[in-house]
Figure 1: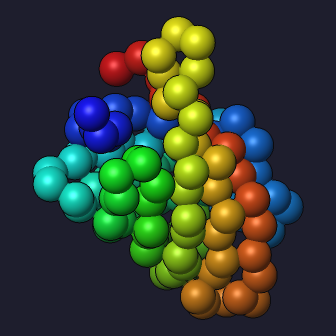
Figure 2 (figure 1 turned 60 degrees about the horizontal axis):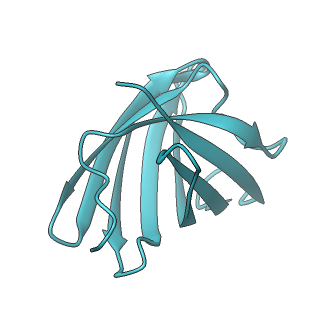
Length: 115
């Protein structure tokens, strides 16, 4: 059975230095068919949204955009690979790159939190 991201919430636990999300950022995903959408905010992020295609293994090919605390619109792309933890929660291993700003790239890990 394919992985279902609908109504799951995630928080970052690790992020590269040039990333803007932190443990104070909360992601809320929705999933319908092979499309995942989400909203996120908190920490240095005032408001953000994402859209992704999900494959049969649960991998996400994502694009994201947000407005940071400085009022700057930032955009990027991300590939996320799921890991199912022993307690059934999802951990996402992410490789991302800004498509705005300095165009730097990095890695992050976000983990599902209780709703």
